[in-house]
Image (cartoon, rainbow, N blue to C red; front, side):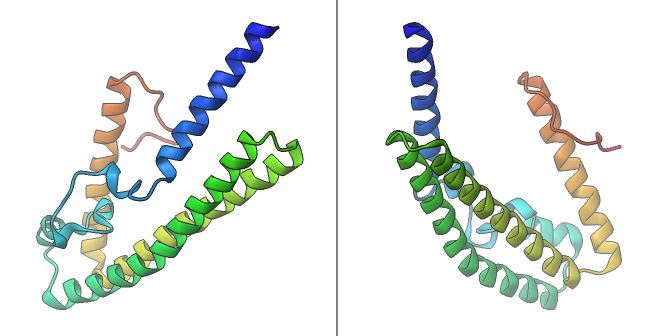
Length: 169
């Protein structure tokens, strides 16, 4: 019994430490290698200089997309901070031995902030895609599918379970 309790405590401490690392300032940016100013922010959406060239964006499209990205960066700052704060409160409650009810409340708050973050990204993606022509949207979808397939292959090669959902054709 004592050994099981110690195992659970160790697992919890590791989980809390991992959550703390992700909640630290720079956590999102630290996940990617540094890139130039033209690739900052939503580079994971594929709108760096290289993607602009691949899609054949006009100067007007580039300007509109950069405006959307700038607005999104500002809105994203407050969302990231709110998520970081919710994670901090969840971690503190867990470490303080809070009740099950309190822990569930904190976990729901973190989940709600994560959903806000996802919806923010979805909104930005939709706004950017609205600037593209139908042909550019098709090309972007194909490029994203290729990127997802490469990601799946790397994960499978590393021994990870593939993410849920249909495998792209």
